[in-house]
Length: 70
Image (cartoon, rainbow, N blue to C red; front, side):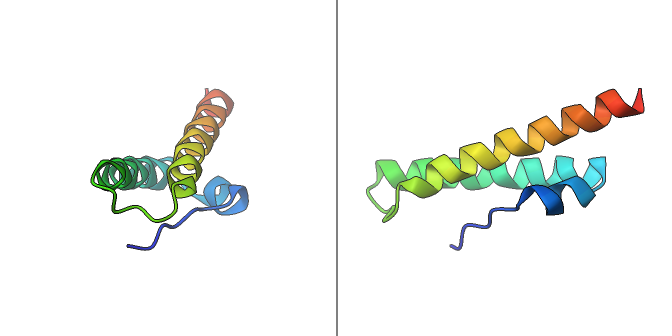
């Protein structure tokens, strides 16, 4: 499974619905990585850290957009 990490520019161009969808996907990927870590299938543990940061990045951008809208 390839881990995809979006950069800030791509995330900022997304609509709130797209961000919500991407957040759900990222959470599912993080869950899968954690399960693989427990079963010793993860080769690069830094991917878990990158995925956590991506989730935080998405949430930050969602909050910024919500504040700007209203």
